Length: 137
Image 1 (cartoon, rainbow, N blue to C red):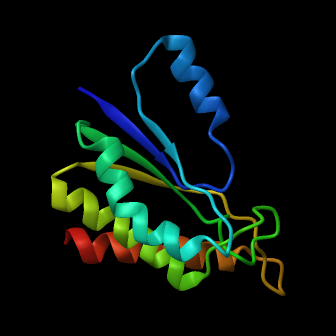
Image 2 (cartoon, helix red, strand yellow; image 1 turned 90 degrees about the vertical axis):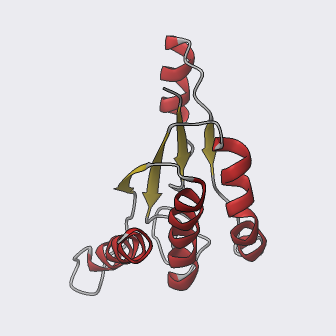
Image 3 (cartoon, one colour; image 1 turned 135 degrees about the horizontal axis):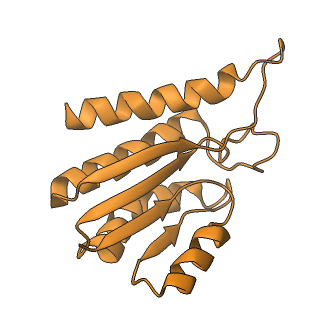
């Protein structure tokens, strides 16, 4: 079984890379990061990039970070709410179209609202679940 990793958290997956190298695994890893200026082009290219990188995989592990959000306090984000939804939709639709099973998790996110809660992060995560549901169900 060949597994791929699509890391869409804002921070580099250096720990994962170290583990993969240490174990000598053949695991394609793609980390998605950009700037507000490059966001639209990156989103347009994402489906083709997924296909090109993971077409020979049997399973894709996806990390859907909330810290790429433009208002994230720590992530130095670059995607707004709608762009994050489009990111997630593109991942799920592309994987479904090519028959690639996805195991995804929620990650990152350091925003707080005026009351100090992490509701803004949860809103991003809720949107990821909604996009997954709309594509797969």
